[in-house]
Picture (spheres, rainbow, N blue to C red):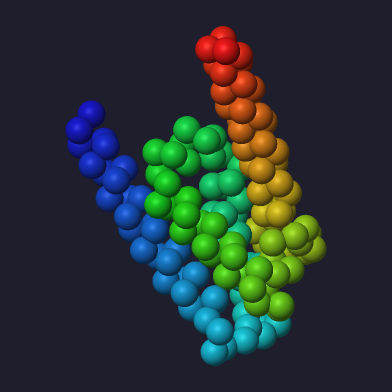
Amino acid sequence: MTAYLENSKLRNEQIKTLIDICSNFLGSKEWEASDEVANIILESALLPLLEQAFRNGSWLDMAKAAEVYASYLALTRSLASQPKLAKCLVEVDPRYKPTQRDPVNKLLAKLNDLAEIFLGCLRQQEVNKQQKTD
């Protein structure tokens, strides 16, 4: 079990490092992405990686690997900050391979909805707790 956890931690650190490198490069204020770069990203494994992370990530999973998910979000922010790359985060033309299952923007919207439900439950729990003490 310890070996599994250590391997998982090492894997997450490696993924985080690679994602951070991409994020820092793509998010540079001194460089503007071209259509060619957008096409390369659309045909790479980068978007399926983000899609898988945001599709399969429960709040518990994200809490366990918070640093990796923070890097995924930073990469998403870097893509969104580049006018020619922002199109990578919405529905992609099906001619691009690998085929997109779910646009990143929709996956993030679902996670946001889940977070709102979770926060609503926490707020209600706090209200109930205060009513019991009053």
